[in-house]
Image (cartoon, rainbow, N blue to C red; front, side, top):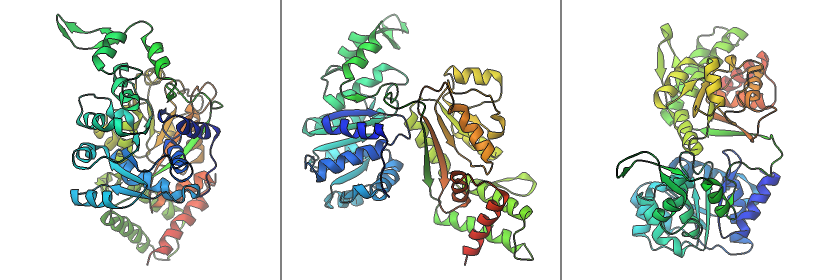
Length: 448
């Protein structure tokens, strides 16, 4: 696929090339991965400034996102990679493989530092905010080898949603203490003062007056950008598809449901009524659960829940609006994460005040004129809908006049399922009953 970068992506890539140590603090969905890979291609195959590159990422991101992006874009041809994942034997074999980029999950960073002679001259840390604890083993391990790294790129969405104290360890890995100090104690004393305490025991700290501005000013030369990508023409909307894959067993169950629904039909043709019912069942199953007799819920998989967990972690406290369609989706999401439904005027008020990190909303409840743009700028579609009106209506709750940030719309799509038909129809703005019928028939006819 040909890559047609946005202006901000060109800007960010050039920023990486011009700064041997830098951090991209860009919102989710703005393309941190492709921006970084575009820069790495130049560094590896054009200017030859990078010899051996290590990418550290969350496990599922390391397994899926980085390899997909590397193979997706034409302009990245020539970049070779090796996945340092799995068992100890598999990781050791991957390290012996000749490649330009080595991708490892953050849980194995300490193992890598302790057991492998460090020979990486370029380091990329995806989700740098997961290194915010200066007491964590992963931070201590990287701190040891940081002087050996010539180039480092940190990637994160929100580096300090809870406390500016979280910035110290992240920036230390970027510049080895040049901007915020070599020790967290000095950083804390300089910019913070005790907040909650019991005599000599201090439970928390709060920034001194002017500390936030001073900290941001100190790191502004190596970071884009603390608050938002302010060089974009606002508001901009970016739409992404995040694929998840069912296991072979789950695929078999999905196919069985599809076949059984068809086999119950006498004529072999799918009429509108039956097509709608089959579409409904297939979309439920793609989400991870399906209703049976007497509205009993049958659980199938947690793949979308796992992907949602990754997105919530990547947001690092930044508000997310999650759209669900079925009640069993609502139940499963609520059981796994700390959430709140947007149902009342009070919910809307609290959302817009930034008091809700993960808000759940049903598209049918997101009526015209409902203003949610002050509370966040990211929508995650956990379950998709055939209704173009409801789809556009919900998106416009955030993507509207008055929105100060880039709106990112994430779609969780289960590969090889009816989800793909719906997202294609949404993209083509072709939501009609005929589209639904034809999509169902096409999948049935493909079955052996």
